Amino acid sequence: MIMDYHLDLVVMIGHVGENLAQVIPIGETCLSRQVKISGVLIHKNASQVAALSSALRSIRPWTQTLAVVSEADYLPGLLHALGA
Image (cartoon, rainbow, N blue to C red; front, side, top):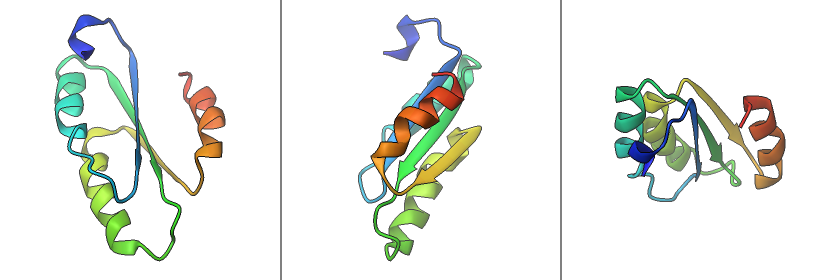
C-alpha cells in the first residue's frame, strides 16, 4: 500500500468504462501525504461520451494533471514526460 513508501508522484491509469472506485482511497492517501497525483484515462471509443464524463468525474478531483489518450501505446511517452 502507498502508506509503506516514501513517494513524490503517483500515476493512476484507468480505462474509460471500468470501475474506478480505487481512485478515492488512493487519492485520499496521496493528498494526506502531499504526494502529487497524475492521471491517465484510456478512451478508445469516442462515441462513449457518457462513460468518459463519468470517468472524468471519478478521477479528476484527485489529480493535479490528467491526460486522456485513445491508445495505451501513448503510456511510455507520457510516463517519461511525467518523470515516472
